[in-house]
Length: 181
Image (tube, rainbow, N blue to C red; front, side, top):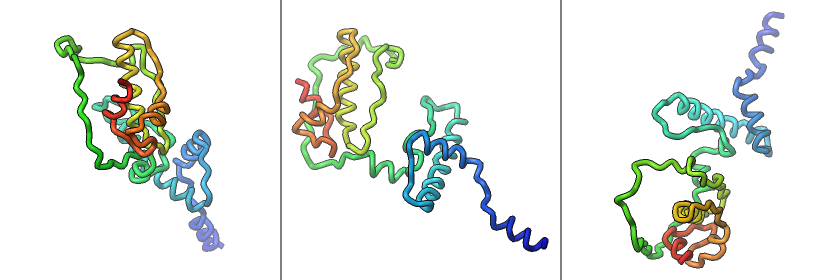
């Protein structure tokens, strides 16, 4: 009888203490997996990412914060493949030369979060539109500096209308800036 009880105990699955965190994360980000095998594989990736995040939170030298987000079940390679969309072509790059720049009066530090004009973080999804987001946000900041007014520009307009870029397949920042001239 004791031998049978020992076999039953050793074959029962051990509950991972991180499983409730994973289940809550799945609920928060509407994650549903096709199979139990896929769910288990994603849980292993989640655990590795969670461990990395926890180790980063113990550091006092960071100037940024880290936490679980909708990408917590992706490896670095998977994230890059899905969300770092620009595939550079051999197109020539044009340099931008500002007509005037007064660099003698620049402050030593600027925290845009306290300026009253930081628009919400954009999520490009699987569209390689980081070039459009960067340009729109840079121009938003320039408008705030120049006029004192905070505006939120449309990255989608750049994606759709800057013909010298490649929409969701990437683009060059300098070409997009030239689209505003």
